[in-house]
Length: 366
Image 1 (cartoon, rainbow, N blue to C red):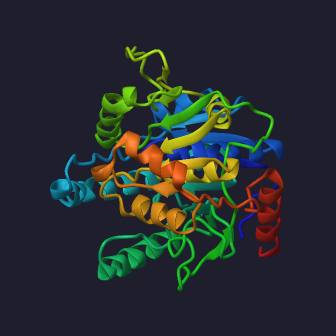
Image 2 (cartoon, rainbow, N blue to C red):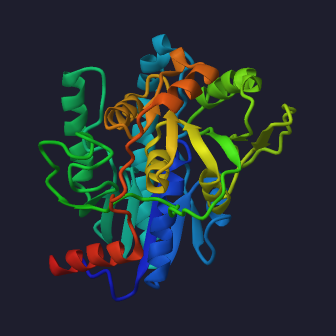
């Protein structure tokens, strides 16, 4: 292992596909700060806006994102992604060259890349964070080919950190616990959650609807919900997941709408809600499971990862789930009322102590 701990400076770089990678890095950033590391964040403008509201005394370097666009329909989804592959590889090449200059500029000791393949270097110890060692698709052959490509990239890093529990009581199934692991030292981090369970909060909202994820599907789901929301009689909070928006939307008196909430505000909103209605993005799932909240999951259409995660949670009776193509708000809340929730209470959650332990084990291997 390279000498990284004499001057504790870490660069943390989250992927820009939705806000999930950015927000799940918040507990990681705070843990490094607790251990008195200098923290530099590599992100785009949106990521910077979110993180500046959550964490103080950190530095930023602008790193352009992949800016992946998703299709509105299933028929064009695969084609839309395939046409962007050259752009993805161009960004990977760009960020790899970018990193070499940034490592020298800040004398960086440790690089933590959340799913950005190009951020490896011989000048610093480099960690790749992912919960998708095995990328889920609809076809087994495609999964095998993607896993080979995934491991080829991951094995350029010194370590791989997996944000999930190590035992069978985990959230990711074969995605984070494949039969064959990459040829690099891996550590399970526990769940990366900004939130902490509390039993002291009174229920203010029957439902908190948290919208997130890439466009255009975020907007598609939002329109569906707003068209149906007056069918609900109880108090509802809708969090649109738009940190740069100041748009005002007129709704019924029992509905409250927020364009964006900080992590602390969203934690409070979740704690004060009986049910959470949201996408099955992995970051969101880690947070609602940590809070032990009843949830209705709506996977983003054609995102096989979200569909797989929602299926695992449904099978384990952790969360109720329904496809967007079959989603009806009134019917979903009735089904959730009848669902036999069995949310686990003993899952491992990442803390500064966890980080200290992982770093110590890495030092032992040097």
